Length: 356
Image 1 (cartoon, one colour):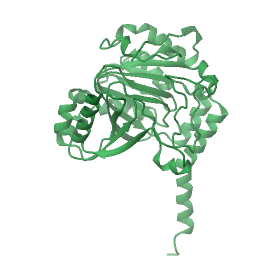
Image 2: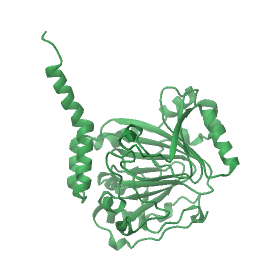
Image 3: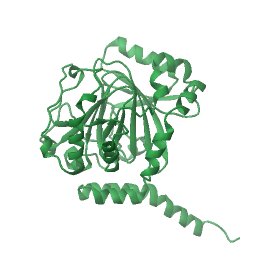
Image 4: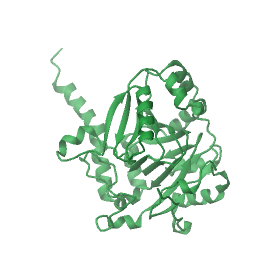
């Protein structure tokens, strides 16, 4: 498959926190991970700027995170005990629990919400989820590699109490002191999950946004991460809020339909390639397109997702230049996810209980 790097945009076009990001990136190009080359990158038509790579002790990293701007942190030791993880180690130690494995007809793993599929009777997902043991996943992955076809597999599983003792010891050895301080100083909500991602080379998770703060910790292999700020919402054409692919972009980056999605011509991304030990901060509501490098072998990643409260969401909307359409979508969903259950609980408390 042909691949090439994308062009770099003029940093003079940036403003505000994005300008700080561009400045920091220019100052720290010497920190680039050299374990990959540009022939391993897919070719796209849009422009990108570099996400800065900084030490976690650099004051500029603190400024970027405080301003909810992406940054790659090179030396947090967040997942240091897991850097020895590879397929044989995990197969021996991860335990006999069930793992969610997605099987796609090609390299693109477009997320969909199974609960919303009833809203769209004609919706046919491009991948299917199967529960299997880790050894079965490894066998399936090797079988898929040998067949050499377009089909791909991708393990996406929340780490839970079914994992083996050695994985638990590794997990407890993560740099919780550092990441807990990041959470506390910014008044983020609780850690909601640690998602383990194991993908084949060339796997792509198309552009989408999450409603949580995310520290994206790379363990094995290299991934290219292309991010777009929330103010480019209108360039990326998300699916309707009730669609199974809510929060996902409708634009095919490899073959964009500019007649159908004309604003995509204005999209400008921020990109980085992360390798073992790197931690990418992905702010909430920033679009992100993630790909395992071509001819780069298996990749292993762990996400650290943190919930945000309704007040933080309103503050975010006020702070960012986003469209009224996006603001309405965000408030609508957060209201029914957080305020809705609270009102429901209050109503039940007042009307569902008999007199004592």
